[in-house]
Length: 181
Image (cartoon, one colour):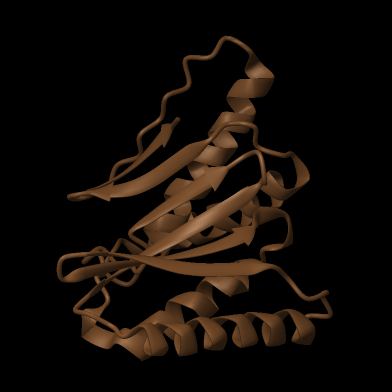
């Protein structure tokens, strides 16, 4: 795996913030092979997680799945003593592939939500869910442990200091690349 960093900004505060955002998105993709791409939109401090599914799903099936995602996330937050959260789910179809977009506010997102979302997508779509072959289990144990810890730190930093750059992280063959847009 490789990380793409574009940190040429001369302002060190901006550089640190961008580095946090870059590392957050890159770590999410490394730790969750189910994710195809992750986009951060600073205006709404919103993160969009993209999952790609092979094959067609009916609108009714996707509405039921979106409802399951919402109920599951609300229950997860309730169990952790948190307030209800905002969630949006929509999808684009391109031929035989469907990209499901899950949008959330980064400020209220908990790391365990990613585990829950990944598990729900895997349970529902199984082999139809496109996954990177570089799972955390397939990586060096030291590297996967470091990435998991780093993701926890980046979540904390991103929630404490609002990221101002629009960014997108995606898979490119055997790499994870993050661009600021």
